[in-house]
Amino acid sequence: MSTWRAERNERALARLDKSLTRPLPPGVMGHALRQSLIPPTPRAIVESYWRHHPLRADVLARALAARSGAPGDWSWRIGTDGVPTSFRLPPAPFREAAHDRGPGACVVCGQPVYRWGWHADLWGDGGVNRNATWHACCAAAWKVWTAPSDQVAALKRRQRHRCAETGKRLLKSAEVDHRVPLFEVWRSRRHEPWPVLLGYWGVPNLQVINRAAHVEKCAREAGARSLAARSD
Image (cartoon, rainbow, N blue to C red; front, top):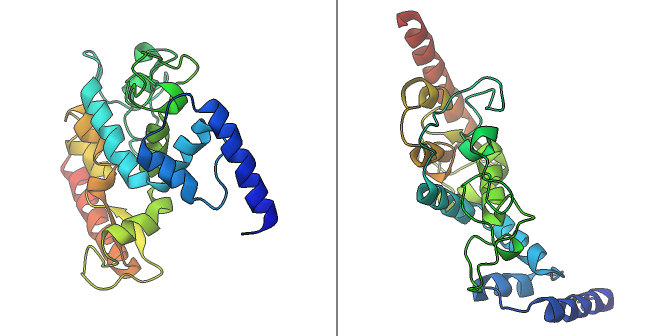
């Protein structure tokens, strides 16, 4: 380790010693201490942890959404007036003005946001963060849902570097794909419960397949979509 890095980490640890009035979960703190540059603030540690564990963040964010459930008068729709303009964006009732729970509640899952963007009151003091509207885990999950191709490396490891379509070894050109295409989710599954819908953007519906298999799959889906449009 360079002298500069050692000195920088020493300053970061000194700063953390002053700001960490209550301990972070051991796994989160252990992650921070393993970094070549230790994050200097608790918030930065939490964000770094979830940024390095995006698939775990997806699972947790969907579990938090299931705890909240959708507002009683909400339904998934696309258009204007603050709702998504495309079915490719995940439904998010608490991002809509009509259902916004205000500062201190996560706009993704609707649950309270606690100190440093954490999703649970580890400190037992009811310290909801009134300056926050996102959990750190939900921010990481949102990136998985809206830019799944950025998670190709993590998804490849999850599949043990095997193509989900052919079972062959994944090539460098392999691509992230939705098992159930999103147009099909919108066309025939949009009335499923909201937390279930989120799974179509998350890990349960994501796979990595080799490019050739992806081209073939897209061709089949385009044919099925055209046939459905004609029958409608």
